[in-house]
Length: 235
Ligand code: ADE
Image 1 (cartoon, rainbow, N blue to C red):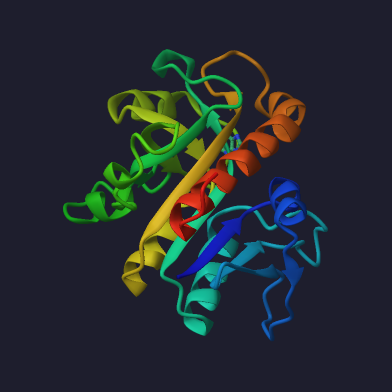
Image 2: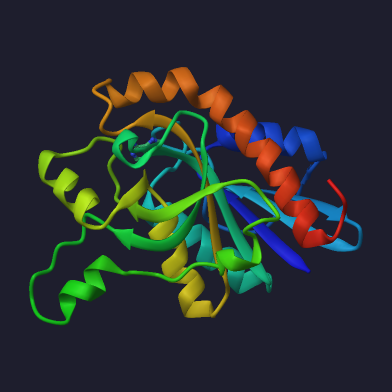
């Protein structure tokens, strides 16, 4: 089995890279993403983070780098499964807490509003991720609807969208990666660890920075169990 783990930020990926002993691989690409490889029981696992933007010197977060990186890697290497671990905002009114691990039942875009007949559902996306019935009972996680936009912040009208669509995870890459996976007919599985509570009243950026380390640790621990599941090892 050949798996791709695609993270947005180096900080989110660091603990997983170190824990498994992934080794850097060089690939010819104009994109800034980094790539690591690890052979686990005859299975090839690649790990990528979107990389440092050469001009702004920050992680290349968001939908455009996520889609381009996923496209480039799926085009160059034929993965059986794309796992997208990362951090996200959760919702206290739907039971979300800092450090929770969520997997998606459905993936939407919440910033693509095109009220023009069939363009409306196109904007929303509504991607179908990896079938969670294959993981329930084997691993401990929360689940629900993920929604993506290019903003860390949340505008008032977006709260209505999140309530109407029962969104449990607000983040910045899942729908873009899902879109590319759909074009390649490859399964997408998001794994998001909660760093901040969208409806909790805190300043998102502050709460995010406070909880990034804990959330990344939870992510690494869950990914170990998830990879053991897919690669047939006991955890
Ligand atoms: N990543 C972590 N927290 C987030 C939030 N509240 N919105 C979007 N992306 C996030």
